[in-house]
Length: 249
Image 1 (cartoon, rainbow, N blue to C red):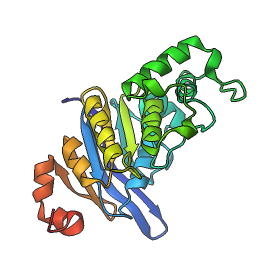
Image 2: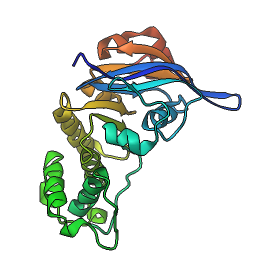
Image 3: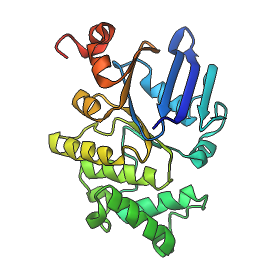
C-alpha cells in the first residue's frame, strides 16, 4: 500500500468569483480507502469531477499511475483504470442486474452498445458480469430486473458495474446515500472486502462508515484541504471538529 496511485497537486477551479477548489493537494495509495469528507458546498463533487475528467481544472496537476492525466477525457481515464460510481444510482431499470453489468463489461472493452439487443448474447461478457455480481453479493439476484431491486441492492449493482471496468481506483460518491441502517451495514462490509484490492476515494457523509472504513481521511472545507491523516488523528484535529465534525464527535 506504499505506491501512490493518484496524486493531485495545486488543483483549482473557479466559477467567476467562487473558488470551488482552491489549490488542493491529495494523494491516494494503491489498495487504500481514502475518505474525502467536508460540509455541503465544500467542493467535494467538483473535486471528484476533476479527477474523473468531467470538470476541467483551471490550474494544477492530476497524476494517475505516474502519468499526467490532467487534460485527458473521461473515457481515456477509464481505460487507464479510473472508475466512478455516482451519488444517484444510474442503472437500466428494465434490464436484469446481469445485463446491466454485462453492458458495463462491454463498454469497458470499447464495444458499441446496441441497447435494443443487450448483452444477452455475449457469453464472455455475461460470465464476467456474473463474477462481478458475486463479488458484490448479488449473484442470486442476477435475473431480477434492476428496477425491482431494493435501493441498497441498486447501490451494490452500480458498484458491480464500476468493477466491470477492472479499475485500479474507484471514485465512490456517497455509496451509503439513501440507505437504511441495514443496507448501509451491508455496503460497509462490502467495501471492507474491497480494501487492499482496489484504491478507493470515498466521498461520504456517514461518519460511522468513514471512520470504520478509511485508512486515511482528507477534510475539504471551502475548497481547501484543512487536514489529512489516519482517522484518529483527523478526529482529534481541533480545526476539523470546529469546521465539520462538531464538538460531540
